[in-house]
Length: 72
Image (cartoon, rainbow, N blue to C red):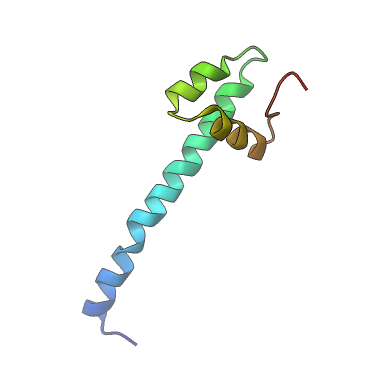
């Protein structure tokens, strides 16, 4: 067991990683919510606003239960 003063820096190194994970998941939820607002939501504009390539956007939408391609 590490002394409390040595354990504190080790615990704080996980904070940035958890923050990035949280922000990524939040961004993906917001992208899926924006796409769900209308069957005619502009996916190209959503991808540009999210700074994602179309293939990345398709994966995010597919993982959140939205169809990757509306034409199918």
